[in-house]
Length: 344
Ligand SMILES: Cc1ncc(COP(=O)(O)O)c(C=O)c1O
Image (cartoon, rainbow, N blue to C red; front, side, top):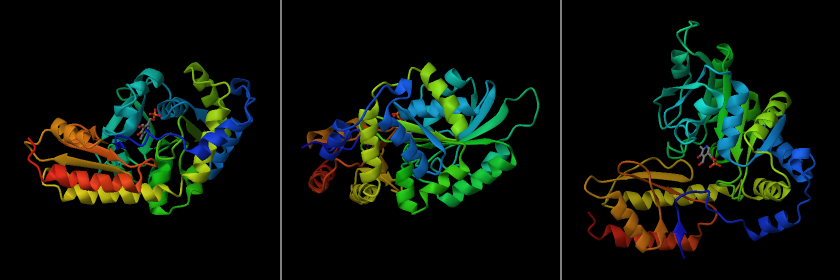
């Protein structure tokens, strides 16, 4: 038994999901003929209060397409310095959209209306045109921190007041919504575009969506084609996504409980310096100075537990639907063993 806590992207499709995939009705989606893809796009859009959706191979592509739809070359996007769109998409915002980022340093990746207002550039040819604000919810690098609907509403208000577009990197938006209990349908009122991942906590093998207005999705479809993201009989994958939206949203609570338990276990470990607040399914903790991250990861590995080094003294663990109660027991026992022993 391997307890793989490196990421929530590691899940394998469940039996039910595989059956749904096997039974999918498919066609060529580049010809607009795959009924299952169309059903997924419509379902996801409705769930989050948008007019339309576009199925994409990855969250990165969904973000990049959305940003391209909402900006012009030489524009600027305001985002946190930890955001996925800036840190982990290979510089794609400058490459694909020819825009520059204005980076904020905010509380675990959550930016505030005040920070946005302070960042807006005057109308002066020396500056880029401030055009877009991008939020991430939940924030991966922020340890799964989340915005409430009230916070997102307040950000929407300043964006509207200052004529800025607003994008949501909602790779893990359902983790946030399950935690806050906010109404998912409200999201569409506040954001021009959102990306949503099916391949993270929701447990599908592949797939993300861009959600927006009908008009923006027509533009997004053209951009997806140019990015090489048009897929043919993608209904087999879309069926997994539909299954995930039907069966794997409510259960995210379970992942959050397990993550909190991992956080408590780590807090009792003398090798651990600090555990960031565990808000959803991501646990980020730092090891004491003098304890090598590689040594700690190797000690975990010797107990068949996998975790991800996360920069400096930090380590990340993420819970997901393949982490069973039995694995949690094994984790607790193993941690006691590792933490009672000397490490350097
Ligand atoms: C917040 C966030 N956005 C976007 C992505 C990109 O998703 P993908 O790996 O499907 O490109 C990730 C992936 O981990 C993520 O954590």
